Amino acid sequence: MAALGFDVKLIIAYLINFVILVVALRAFAYKPILEMLEKRKKQIADGLAAAEQVKAEAEQERAKYREELEKARRASQEEASKIAQVTADMREQILAEARKEAEELKAKARAEIEAERQAAQAEIRRQMAMLTVDLTRKMVGETVTEAKQHELIGQFLAEMGD
Amino acid sequence: MKGKTLLYLLGIVVLVVLGGMFLRFELPPISVSAEHLPNMYLGPLPITNSLLTSWVVVILLIAMAYFATRNMQMVPSGLQNLLEWIVEQLYNITEGVSGPKWAVKFFIVPTTIFFYVLFSNWFGLIPGLGGFGFCEPHEVAGQEVAAAEGEGEGGGSLILGCQPGEIVVPIFRSPSADLNNTLMLALFTQVTAWVFGFTALGFGGFVGKFFVFSGIAKAFKPDEHGNKRNFKEMMGQVAFGFIETAVGLLEFLSEFVKIIAYTFRLFGNIFAGEVMLVVLTFLVPLTLALPSLGLEVFVGLVQAFVFFILSVAFYTLAVTPHAHEDEAH
Image (tube, rainbow over all chains, first blue to last red; front, side):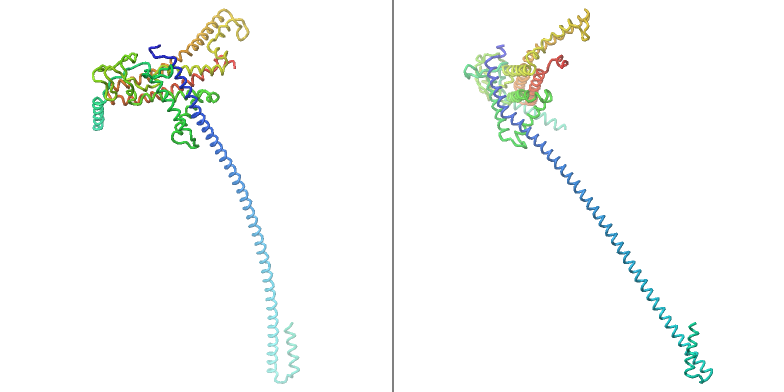
């Protein structure tokens, strides 16, 4: 054993040396490093959890906005259909009014035409009577009196009126 | 391609010639045991070059740990990053082998062994360190030495400058090349493994792993169906019981054999590597020693890792209950 250099004193010296190293490395290296690794792991986990939460919140917000958007779209559709209805009603009303006005104008025009026709007829009748009297006077001479002339005209007009 | 090969060959030849001209030195004595440094004592303790190196290694390691962790940053860089990476990897390996429950307890000693052995191995490889030391008369070393043939011729090398008839006692020698150190590591690992074993399994549970007589006793009891065994069954069971007992005793023996194997494995690897480097440097300075140095750096790392993983394995085995107890649970 001595040839190989075994010496209990040296073994104890190495042992003390090694124990000091174990204690020192535990204090200066392993403990702070493992704590740091744990801290980092926790921070990463927290970060991931926070990111998940933010994602969930964003998802919720998105759903809320989507819902509001849908609501707004529905409201605008309703508004549009209401406006369309109102427009259609107005159109109908305007058309009805226009139709009514046209009818009234037509009726008025018809009445005027009728009146004019009647006036024209009366004028024609009057003209024809005058012509007839003139013609008759020329045929019978100047013997027809003023009174007779009026009587003839009246007679003629009465016949024409029939 | 041919020109490149010629260039390499020329470079090697130049290195050989230059090495032969300027780096000739006497083959230092090759001593299995660490050399005592002349007139250096710590009380009753004679200081050897390996012990001194181990102190240097311990101081270096503590300083490294201190500087790496004195201002810990959440985003690591530099030395903190390197140390964190190594510690994390070793912790993960420990966790993988022994499980998360034991990893925290087991991890400290094997990891310290890793750093200590790695630094010890590499410290011994620093070029020129082996030739830096005290000149001592040949007889004073008191060890079996193999001095160079030309010892008496030229008054030592230019670097060492020892007188004829003197040998160099290097100041530094890798602690891994000292059996006292490797034995201490082996004993420390094995004793702590036993402590873990006793703590985890209790005295009966731990000792019961090695002294298994239940197999033989079972032969004289009824079988699992409650029937009395016939002679043939009884003999079969006795044979199995004997095998179990023998295996247990072998395991008990291996607990002590491990210490020896552990001691000599590291010593053999590192001591042989250093001797090889010295001899190669002596024979062909520079040229052959450089690639061997690279190999020894790798061997040093592998040995440190082997010791780490063996310690973790010993601890894990120590806290693992006997197979039959496992089945019973």
